[in-house]
Image 1: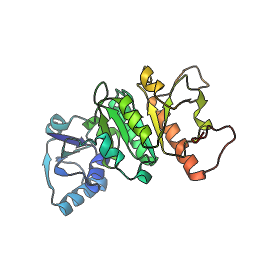
Image 2: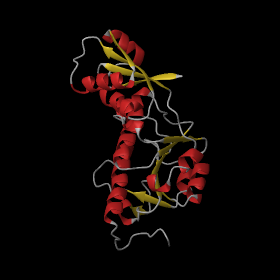
Image 3: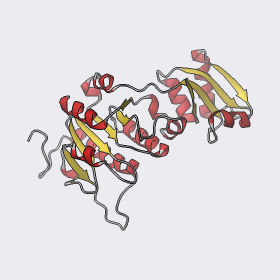
Image 4: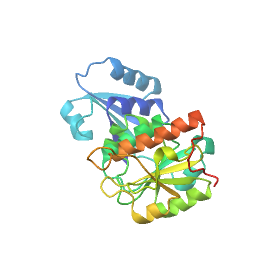
Length: 254
């Protein structure tokens, strides 16, 4: 099956990565400068055909908000959990598991933040969850070209296998027992984030080694899931960079 990647940054990152791009379509009359010019140049270098078509046809092919460019690609190739865990451990020291995320924009934003924070990959369930779509590709701003996504049948089984590979699993929860700054996130860790409305499902939360929370000082009781993921992932990155223990942290070898 084929999909379209839409948007200037997602298309150019797909061209720069190992993603196989079949064809590129520009809106007729689009200004051939900046990123559009770079896309055209990369297409020529790689021998990829490109076409200029009416904006209306471009919209009908890949939806609106395409910024005047679409790339035709094969449907996204998910990894299996086994393939994911075969990635060298130093390249996946921190991983992210998403429990039933529904909004494509949230998923894309999470992927973008995860890639920027050096996360080794993301795991999602096959059912009751948003999948990789053109809207997700667009929202990820090209990050999906670089960060692997594994898809699993059962999250709880996946958590068990992740633990067998030496990971400590931290679930983000409003009822978390520790603040996200009071735990050691420097080892091989898996962060688990839940659905936008319901959070983690009870069994998924039960299977986490620790539950952590973000302090909320205002009148709204929770953050958007993509924001919450960003806060915790960058705390993990900060700890890895500093390697400084804090008094009162939960140690991962206790």
